[in-house]
Structure formats: structure tokens, C-alpha cells
Length: 386
Image (tube, rainbow, N blue to C red; front, side, top):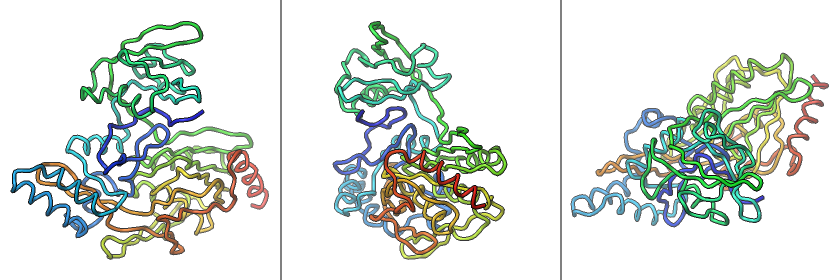
């Protein structure tokens, strides 16, 4: 099968000729990952209202405002000239949407789907309690039409846009008509979009007392949910921390997750316009449980920070494929018209001083297919060793 999963994918957001955000699995995170928290948390972490790296963009926006032109468009041009692939400019509404997504919320109908190799759009998950679930839509159903438009063979991003009602700026309560197929049966459902929440942390019990903790993004509260999952795991049982496809999120949440497995100490370092900062785990983490971290090419940013800390500190065996390699940090500045510019202001390093940006993290055990099974095997060996 090909294509990307659909669930709470965002509207198209400006980033030169590309999408600003990279979205993985069922939850938003992305290019604005490397953030430290919500708007206030981002500001307090820098101890500066406007990072120096934002000056050129801010000045361009202010000049445009004085000349009666669009500050946002001027900022976009300045960002494009900077050559920084992770910098972005958002309208006020787009930035609010991003913040809501990082809070684990989105507007939609609760469908997760992906495109088959023949172009068909197949439902892979229906969120419990969502409009789609109440309508009786099931995993395996085919999505054929959205508001009368045939979606078979359409790019995933276009299908997402139709589901969200981007063209009409549709919000919660707006209607969307879906054409569906189950076997030979075809039918139409009219749903109302709703504000929904997603859980970026899911837990599953495996054989031999192993607990699988899947973290799709470091949204608000995800670090504490990892802690709860470990606390509830069978005593002495191993943990598989699955960070595959995790495109990042709030650095503070990744540090909280690191604190679950480390007894204090260094998680990483980062710089903001040349000013060095330190990220430390809270003391008291569980340092005895066997732990494997699963990663792949979709493991990014804050997820790479966590992976590097666990690897450098000798706390986890990292299994999978090389991670993406986004080790940069973005911070926001409000522009005169209410839009927001997020520019790269620094980079982080692992406890051993390794830079991640453009390099990624190489697993201890490189495995492509069957990574979870290999992780279980590794945990069996770690359990025997302990």
C-alpha cells in the first residue's frame, strides 16, 4: 500500500513551495517541532521575547505594514530567502490551529485511512465516539466520494483537504457528505465535523509481560501518559518504546518521557542564538526495566532527542532504521498583522555531544522488516541478562 495515513491532517500551510508541517500517523507534529510547549512555554524557555534570528523577518513585516502591504507576504519572502527549510510563516488562524493540534485536538470526522496501490482510499481506523463511529463506518470500508467529488486516485493531501472542508473554511458543526463502499454495498453518509481529541500515546500488552508503548507525537501531556503506562506495566516486564513515525512535538514532553527511564542527568543540550542551554531529566525514573526504543526514518526532532538520550546514557537498545535527522529548534515571533513567524534559532545535541541535524541517529541494531519482533527478542535477552 502507498500514501500517507489520513486522520487529523492540517490545512496546507505556507512554507515556500512546500508544506511547512510534516505529519505522521494519526497526529499532528512536524516542522514546528522542537518547540518547548505552548505559546507561553516557548517564550519562557528562551528568556527572550523575540530571538535575534527573527529580526530580518520582523523588520520586513514592519516595513510592509508601513507601506500598506501585507506583512505576512513580506515575511514569507524573507523566510524563503533565508534558505532555512524549517522556518515558516503562519496566519493567525493557521498558528492557532497548529497550537490546537499540539494540544491533541483537531476538527474532523474521526476517520483514519490510506490509499491502496490501486488508488482506492481504505478506512484503517475509526475513532471511538467520533461522528464516523456513530454513523457505523468501519475499518476496511472504502471512501469513494467526499461532497460529491471522486477521491479514488487523488493525492492524499487533496483528500484530506476535502474531508476538512478547507475550501470553505469549514469548522466544527459543518456537514460533509461521504460516499462509501463495503463489499458490493455502496451508500452515502452525511456527517457533521466535530472537535476531536486524539491520544498520542497508546499501550498494548505483548507476550512474556512485555508492554508496547507507542508515541505518535509529543503533544501536551504525552510525557505523563508514558509514565502512567510504565507504572501500570507488569513488574519486571520489558518495555518497547515505539517512536517510529513520531515527527516530534514539544521538547519538554520528550524530556518528561526521558525522565520516566532515567534517574536524572543530562537529556541533551541546545543553543538559542549561540546561548547554550541544558535539558535534564527529573530524578527517580525506572532504570531497571529492560527497554528497547523502536525508530525509523519518520522519527524526528523531539523523538530523536529522546532516542539519543536513551542511547547515549546506555538506557535502551535502539532498534530499527536511521532516524530522520531534524535537530533544529524553532521559536515564534508575532508579526504586526497577527501572523506568526517561526524561525530556526538553534540546534540540540545528545548527551554525548552528537549533532542530529542532517545526520539522524543510527540504531544499535539496524532492522527494517520485523523490527517489533526483533525488539521482543532483544528484550528476552536483556531480561535474561538482568
